[in-house]
Amino acid sequence: MRVAGMGFQRSAPPAALRAALASVGAVDHVATARSKAAALAQILGCDVRGADVAGIATPTMSQASLNAHGTGSVAEAAALVVAGPNARLLEKRKIIGGVTIAVAEGDGR
Image (cartoon, one colour):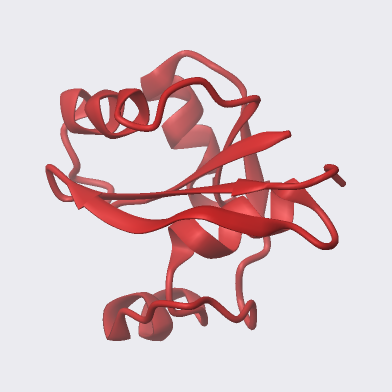
């Protein structure tokens, strides 16, 4: 299963969120921090899985993400959590139009 994890500020334009998701190709699920899942689902018009990202180790680190969510990258952490145990990142976080996106692969949770 391929999971796109997304990190964004609530002020992110819907077009930027859609463009970031489109940039990673086909995925089975979209994930973000639990506190942002409902807002992202409404904007994207699809199911979005909320993940508890605090304390999840990520290969990249944003101080802002660490301060706000307790993880170095919401995008990477959400993708890894939803992709399940033994998940691996296929794409580390990248920033597209102010939206952070990462892709993980795993067996699901």
